[in-house]
Length: 465
Image (tube, rainbow, N blue to C red; front, side):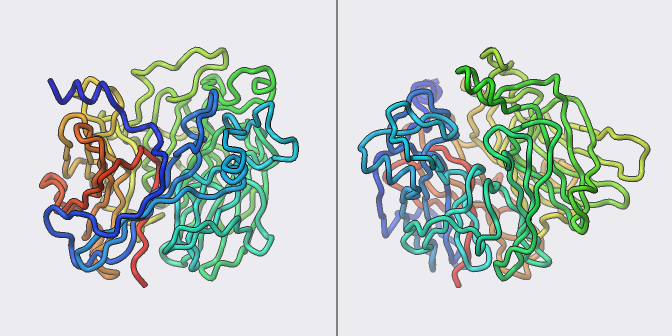
């Protein structure tokens, strides 16, 4: 009861107001000697308070945990976007939510990018990502900001925080929504080859303007989910929510061959739902199977008139989408695989777009009084059956679990999960290292920080060169 009370009094959303370096973290247990590299995490950490700002739009802060020969160090830095630099110079906030300038902001200030959602390594470059701007290049060791990366001028506009790297070809596949400007129904689609050269970039129209956080890529297909968190410039201009839940719009998913063009997209429909994150997808004959974390109603966004969505329906569950490419139907199937609330699904990325036998996601503890707090990890097989389930002590919360293979030729799932854990009673964070196929045993090692890492979004592991 005392621990639950602690959890109710505090959360881990608020930003930390500092940058720090911790060269030697205290280790509990023993870090695997094979873990040599850096876990990079990204998330919103506003430099200044901003009236009416959504959690999604805080300035990006990178957190880097470097592991080497059983030791761990830590560094955090804000991503110095044009917005961050302008506000730092002004000593105050200049932007509100979703790139909206405050009335007293300088007229020539136009870039509200925050680079706060994810961070990936591709073609020798470390890139901080959000979904409304180009990637921001980061210096791996210092976390210094190098500026926007536009692939020799061949990519423009919005760029997803969830590009997919093909494990066979090394190609990076990406998309962007609001591709014709804010709150428009246009999407872009493109690819970057393994050497970092842009090989494709095109735009097309979706059924309506939607917040498209993630998308689906298999060996031969790309799928674009258009789900009813809708965007409306009319609403935004009248002071109403720019993004809102409109279930009457229904759910659409556009299916395109990777070898084809946007003109070839076939649109499938289903009942209204929302998905922030895809676990994995693959082809099974004439079918495409995609495992996602599906909400019946969108969380964090209201109805167009400002009414909140139903909290009982605004929880994500592991769900399987099935598309029959040879069938005489434009409907796709949605089948829940579990009733457990969860988010931030991950796989062994060597199986991205291919049939996989292991997946993991952060889950909520249904026995705790605080609904929606992610406080455990679930390990599932390729059919969604639970292989393991670990819950933290009451009140503690966990980030997205990132898989790291034991070696390049290790079997799928043979490796570790790395996740940042907030210790509510101590108000600080640990980096937890789990054996990926035995999460019920709890962390094999903890690297302990003296301060907390605020709840954030996504991260990735980059092995030592």
